Length: 283
Image (tube, rainbow, N blue to C red; front, side, top):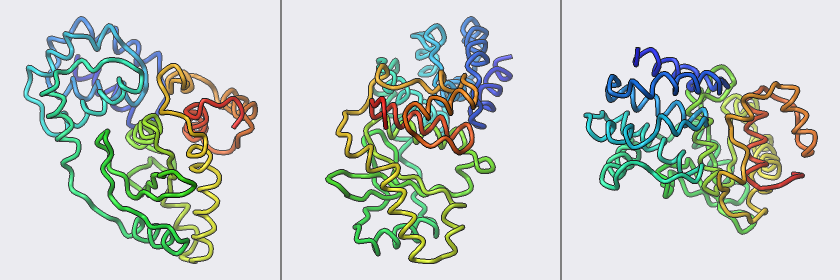
């Protein structure tokens, strides 16, 4: 059923599970049955494919866009379609939705209330002790809100403080992976602070400062200093292709680029995507 197809895609995407063949099968089954999909099914399916980074032109054509605009979508559905359109922009594809409807989707995406967590306040305070002036809750052109932005090395660097809701265990959720990937795609050097790494510092200002300095040197600054333009779809490795690789294959690619090989599969993929976004052969 359309509900089963949408729910299956959503479940795999939410868990950040690589399954390009499954998504290809969902697209094949869904395309001739678009007329049976309700608004929620459409938005959920579009969002899931954006997370998985699996192109499906036979599914996401004019008929899909027309049905999205014809059905009453709730707030969450509009938000999901905005991220789907951002994904198409990542891949260098023209947005299929009309301009007025696209505006509705973006307005829904940016309308969420701002909640500054205790963890975020601690990270911003630590950045201040290091001499950074952090601008909090920065709205980007894409519609994403950044927890904080600092200027360093002549570049603006996004700081994302990721609490428990951003993870499944210690694996980034699909929503977290999508936001990270899209921010980097649109040219933002990104410093991610997972809650468990921050908690492990035990509240020590010295350890917190050292952690942030090391993270900036290791992750964010190299991307900022590369000076490269935001990548196009041909400049970076699609996440779907990386997801299809085994962990040993991913580690081999990381070794070839001189990158760390520790971590779980989602972290290895994220590291390769970051390097690929810099358009580098040796990071």
